[in-house]
Length: 428
RNA sequence: GUGGUCGUAGCUCAGCUGGUAGAGCACUCGGUUGUGGUCCGAGAUGUCGCGGGUUCGAGCCCCGUCGAUCACCCCA
Image (cartoon, rainbow, N blue to C red; front, side, top):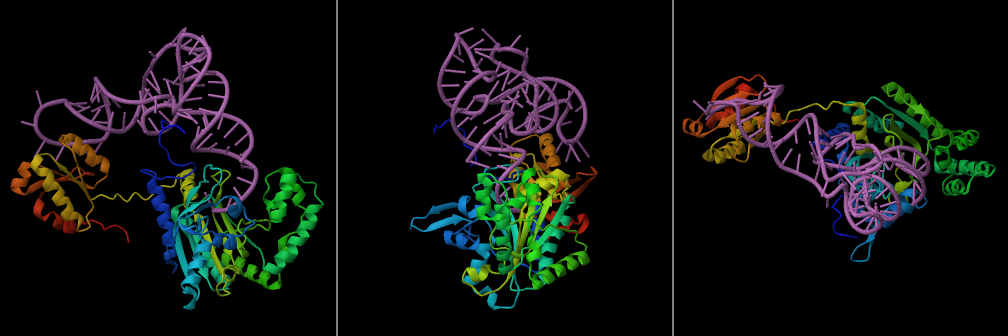
């Protein structure tokens, strides 16, 4: 350690600052809107939880829990962990506060930072952002499809095109167990290196995800989970497919899909974007029918997704998505005399309280510099105020787009904005 | 965690075989009295990621370290 090393952000965190923060804001807002738009209600949860929650919820055997968690002890000696994903925390809160005692399904959305101690890479950060939804307490295939549709609609609204959806069914616990045994038997016949064997030991499905050609071809002869599904699982999965088709949501069935968290059962899905490189998953999720009971709650099923906000931002950039340039400022005020500065601020505050968006020039700069700043701010109008204007209560309001100037009374400027100029209040 | 590539002004980058740093954009000021966007002129700005070494001399060479990036792995 030496103190001449310049201060910098911790390794692998994503940060958003102007101008790029606009894209982040936009993506996050659209994701949330899609969920709210479908009847999902906000749940805001702590960023750290009892370590035990993730051990039991996400699963001891997963990489996420076994080697990627930020775990620490607090001053009371409790073991806490920075949340690596959202579902476990939501279930904990639903159980703890009896949210499932009302009408079902319980539909919730969340948004915020998550943490995983992985080797960073573009699209993979140690602190990253997700928007997720959970629908708890319904076995309908319709709710599976609604959840997928919330994601798909959000992506489309954002303006993304170059992405695709893959779905599969992981079956119930029993079918999966029967299948896993067969798969282990098959894998034992393969001549694998030590590393792969160790991975297969933890979760044999993982080998389906291996990028190496020889493993891929070896695994092409492997038994497929789909062939071991129970009749009811198959029926459910087929219903999901026909509903998706009905809604016009394109998908492909990938019966080799692997999900990294232990709790998934039944329907599982993944959205990937094709402009992103190795970290191409922009969102994914599925059913987790045993999770709630596992965490000590009622035996209710659930389904949800997590969407990576960071990766969606990258996807927008890859596709050059144009963000609706809702020019935020209505007015930019340029005070050009000492006594006008306070008056300009007072005017700005008066208009701001009426929901007119106003900014103004600070510092003692020339009128030219002030107008340049007005121009750069993107404001629709500008207003120069000097001592003459203050005395006469009259100033020249300039339309920055057309250059047209009209004379207005400063004291009643808000009326002009409301009546003649017609300013649009911000969305919502 | 493993391997490869990279790290020079706010941004994008140039800098030949080592001789103490440059361009474009952005920024600031100005182009005669108080109105922006184009144009013209002038100007400010760098611990060359950080630490150490080799050398008379290092942005350029060597070692270490931090960070980014690509792939594996993993997944959002």
